[in-house]
Amino acid sequence: MNYKEEYTASTTSPERFWLEKARDIEWFKAPETALSGSANGYQTWFEGGQLNTSYLALDHHVNAGRGDKAALIYDSPVTNTTRTYSYSELLQEVATFAGALQDLGVAKGERVIIYMPMIPQATIAMLACARLGAIHSVVFGGFAANELAVRIDDATPSFIVTASCGIEGTKLLPYKPLVDSAIELASHKPNGCVVLQRPQLHAELDSTFDYDWHALIKTCSPVPAVKVDATDPLYILYTSGTTGKPKGVVRDNGGHAVALYYSMGALYGIDENDVFWAASDVGWVVGHSYIVYGPLIKGATSVMYEGKPVGTPDAGAFWSMVERHKINILFGAPTAFRAIRKEDPEGEFIKQYDLSSLRTIFMAGERLDPPTYYWTLEKTNKPVVDHWWQTETGWPICSNPMGIEPMQTKPGSSSVPTPGFNVKVLNGIDSESTPGQKGSIAIQLPLPPGCLSTIWQDHSRLVNGYLREFEGYYSTGDNGYIDEDGYVFIMGRTDDVINVAGHRLSTGEMEEVLAAHPAIAECSVIGVNDALKGQLPVGLVLLKDGVDINEADLEKELVASVRSSIGPVACFKRAIVVKRLPKTRSGKILRKLLRQIAVDEPVSVPSTIDDPSSVAEIATLMRDKGLVEAAEV
Ligand code: COA
Ligand code: AMP
Image (cartoon, rainbow, N blue to C red; front, side):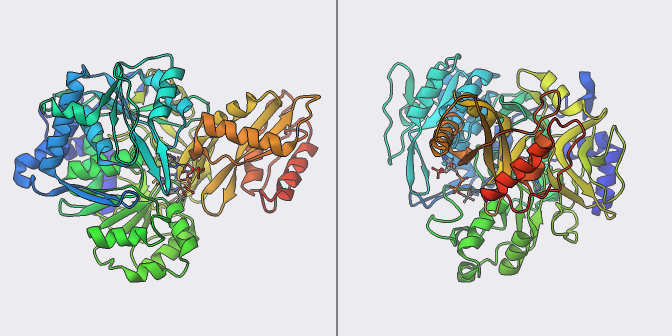
């Protein structure tokens, strides 16, 4: 089938399409129906089917005689280590660690939080949970104790799995004290904590609460994979929303496995002999789908990299990885390629390595800006594919479907809707935009398999946050347009989410931290354009009457608060004092207007504004501080 036929089949008859795709994976009990409706007009996939995702990713390949094949390559320039795990070895490690968790009492349906750096044990812990039917929730290492505590309280895990330290470039970051303080801050108390001691730093363990990973696996036996229902949760992954409280996106087992298997072939053009490298982190959705589950379910070789695009040791790191491991597909965030380009504009490093194995470079996490697209294309001479997706969808909504029919690229566009995603641009209540007309991007229900099944503990958050805005559609929170050839252009968010170095962050959450400072009456956090990281947060703060504080001191205090409450990953470095914030007459801060100033877009001042001069005042201030370029109002 060509793309058009495949896409049409997926949207006109989703049940038939996905039931057929479901036959490509091994089930303990194959589903008889693909799609069943649920309350709230939201879908459930493969009800009645039974499987195990860890079995699919490991046992299935070993049973098929591919046990000696490389499953996972761990490459860590920061510790000078490389290790390859065959499918048999990875299965042995996963089944044994699952045995250890089972001995600790972890059972099906219980939650386990994994807070680990980019080491193979993070993958092993995820697959071990899946093996037991326990629900993992991986928390990214760049989040502070408070963020971890929020997730502990929401997921109520029975155990936490961590490591003694992470290594970020040249920095050694002790993880255990951070986990301890998160548990201290949280109301929910887990039963214990499993700690992987790394040779670079030993953590102090509390013998009544902590368990040493290596000691545990010495005394336990490997366990088989348990049967779970297709609709049982595999994991919870927290992501930023408009409010301060992160959303626990829940992924099921059945739909997820079918969608990821399909995407590996259809979108990435991968088969089981290929080496796939997603240069992301297991703490993000890209890491879940394309470091761990996708490549392993497909039976390919996945690469796990504990390093940075630059500085570990240099801007040639990505190309050296490609040569060393004969990588066929490379997937990274545009910000990583911007960092490489900044240090090696002429691509001198690229010339030093053999990139002949590399077929395609995929990018996601933020819009691939045309200069980065052209630079990567010209310097590597490889096809470069921008593809658009979200934590919620778990796999790409739009992409150039390289495994079905490679299509012409349009720089600035993430190409065409992926089979299964009925993408529309809506410019009002259910009214579709004409080609080229900008609007809110929505996906007509049902969403394909693999997308979120609910928000943990709060299904109404899914309904209210995604399904209410347009009846019969899922609102993506992104805006943009579709051109006359059906290519989708994503222009930015419609809400208070910003994207910093490919990391999704909530400005609302940062505002809560700033507002807690005793000197601050009101505040707003906006994302300004940044040449390297895409966006950077800036706090606009209004002081309480009578407060006398040095602006530089205040900025330092606010930067420290955001770092300690949210984490270094927020990259919050700037706060400026303003005299007024633009508001409506009813006192609501006009955030959309501030967002427009921040990204140098034409500002539309609404008639409901209380004091129109406040807009020009903010724009001028931001321009004077070098935060925006034009800001003409
Ligand atoms: N654990 C602890 N701290 C972390 C961390 C982790 N896993 N990841 C990042 N941090 C810290 C960094 O050390 C840095 O701290 P600092 O303020 O003390 O310097 C801070 O968080 C900001 O990190 P980052 O935004 O990554 O900036 P950087 O300057 O270290 O690196 C890039 C810049 C562009 C090289 C890097 O952001 C990058 O590789 N981005 C790609 C992101 C990605 O893969 N996203 C996934 C979507 S596909
Ligand atoms: P996350 O949930 O962290 O994957 O972030 C999802 C958000 O990142 C999307 O809603 C978009 O705003 C943005 N995003 C991700 N990929 C792209 C892309 N290829 N083009 C434009 N925006 C993107």
